[in-house]
Length: 364
Image (cartoon, rainbow, N blue to C red):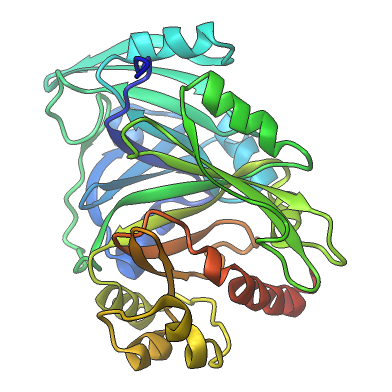
């Protein structure tokens, strides 16, 4: 077995550039049950930006806004709307991670640097990937502060109960026409990932739209990045819609795992999260396709949760509607009961429900 030149322990954090970080933080606390963790802004000496850090189990989200009109953060948000800028990866050696990936062709985002405060030190480095998305390598073995140097603990009175979200299962990137294999090769050659699954336009299509997807994963399977590109169809697919409104390639959705999807989705719905619905007829035949499952089919139908099976077991999944004004970023809630796959059996029903939303938006 070849040596893993880029060992990754997991997702460290996902950072969004947003128009109003304070309000975004409130939304994710209220609607998704994230807990306040850390803050950086004017009170910590920053003059150009504000960041709020939220946590739920192993998931850390950072929401960052510009405080000045002329800044990279402000430009990014104006161009793309609220969206993911940084997918940070937790590593044991951020210098080596940067050296290995840039030597293999990655464009540097920033060279390794060490930041310190009274809680210790963090080493970080960064490389560019598709669109304006970047990977930042975070080495925090000598740090015990709330988040990173420069942040202070954020402990407001307002807190909400969690919703059972556990960790980032995978993150999907939408890339432009004929770019999927370029980025698959990037993750393979530059980061040492391998291809876990592949879906072509016969797998992921309806009467009107289609896309292609390949799933890349690191050696321990903790990082999974499906890469989507549009495919020719009669009408404009969801990937094309995303690219049109986001303005370039970017992170389409973050899939968050739960151990009890019925509880999690029930809570999220109570808090105002809107989900895509497949036709009720889906539930008439789904058990013929997936076989015996532990959950009551009527409970799944009531919440609109989808089921699929592979050789390892089955999974339960559901997708939110876009959480921004632009039809770009959304979330998947997933519970795996052995299955390692991504719900191929649900693609057609799911796409048809997405197309119904596109019809309402006038973007199909």
